[in-house]
Image 1 (cartoon, helix red, strand yellow):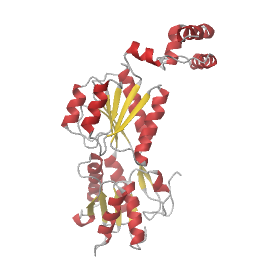
Image 2: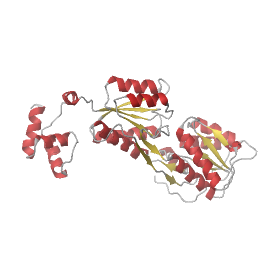
Image 3: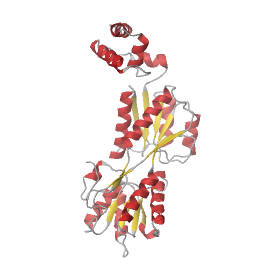
Image 4: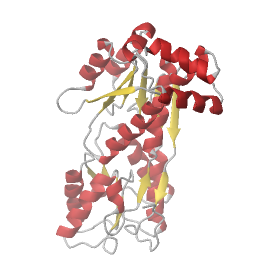
Amino acid sequence: MTNKISIHEIARRSNVSIATVSRVLNNKGPVKQETRDQIIRIARELNYKPNSTARSLSRRKTDSIGVILPELVDEFFMNIIQGIDEEAHRYNRYLMISSSHSQRNDIETILEFMSSGRVDGVILMAPSFNDEIYEIIQKSHCPVVLLNPGTTRKDIIGFSIDNYNGAKTIVSHLMGHGYEKIGIIRGPVHNIDAQQRFKGYYDALTAGSLKYSEAYDVSGDFSLKSGYYAFTRLMSQSDRPRAIFACNDYMALGAYQAARNMNIRIPDDVALAGFDDVFSSGIVNPRLTTIHIPIIELSRRALSYLVKMIDGDIDSTAPYQETVSTGLVIGSSCGCKQSTAQY
């Protein structure tokens, strides 16, 4: 049985129009749930398989989404891919995932995706967003959604994390314990997430009438190794901080390793807090106090918005920004006796 006959047969058996069957099979347009379930059931009984090549040619679409991430190596980025993949499956779209880390830069990867015609749209996470990337996006006919964009520009389409308030919340929590000497392990200098988290840290100190100290400010690069060495530097001073805010969980986990090697007890000798709430932060002892980011939900929203741009349901030239709030996850690394963490 050919696909053409099959879709007519599905419509006949479902007692609906071919257009209704098409809407259900392509996941486009409103259809009553009862009707949708019936059509899907009959399609499965007939073992209907759409001719994706012919469908793509007729609509001049590939049904593929390009995803460009800085890295593909840790839990944070795996969660991003999970959220995008789950939503892509719901829309019957395929993913082409690439990393701009080390082997190629953002510009090369973006140009390759957009010029190849292999994808209908792109989700881009570029922490080092610059004018050249902006110009490419503006001139391209390929829809682009920025995930946690590394820019403060307003004329883009982007889905972001509320880094500033998350950092301010967790530093305020440390201050609530009575800690006055609070250090920070920063992220990369040119990374906007790191900049926003530092600003949240600085403003929390100011709001609490605490002085910022350069001696308690050490740079990292979001890696476990940099957290290890930053913690060692902070805690090798004669005037040590009493609490440390690491601007992501991986640097905080590096700090745990350094603390063990230096025979420093967390939180008895120094309190510690992180940011991101990756899985590993819940299995260290004591449990890391951190900031939860709904990164899977953020990724789903970005993919859904991009599909609507591709399908013409949303103006792909109109700027749009959406920011998701964060939540405080209390472990015992900060000195709290009870945890609010969900394991």
